[in-house]
Amino acid sequence: MAFAVKIETCPQCGSKDTQNLVRVEAGCPVRVYVRCAKCQTFVARYTLERYASDKTYESLLKTSRRGGCLIASRSRAQELEGFSSKVEAEFKETIAVPPTELKVEEIIWKLET
Image (tube, rainbow, N blue to C red; front, side):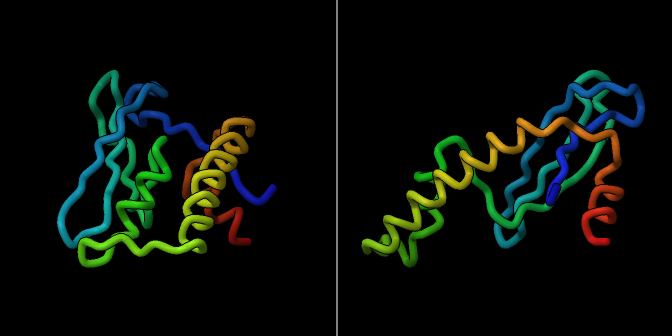
């Protein structure tokens, strides 16, 4: 398999119930801080290259704007449709994979070797 799925676990209390705190700061990459919903302990931090929500088409439209003007073309429309369907397909593929108990660092190391 070319990827693994990980459900974060709190190092303090062992809970898998977490909250994502999304930090958006001008000029910086989006950072997601994961904290335990049970004991509020820091669990992990992720830095995002690109963000997509359940409204993937709208998300990509917002990032496609340059100087306030939307770049419109047939190829752009195809790219937007492909983006939405790719995100949806990856999500379905991801939830179908049983979660691993490995730490994220171990998953990264395993996939790189």
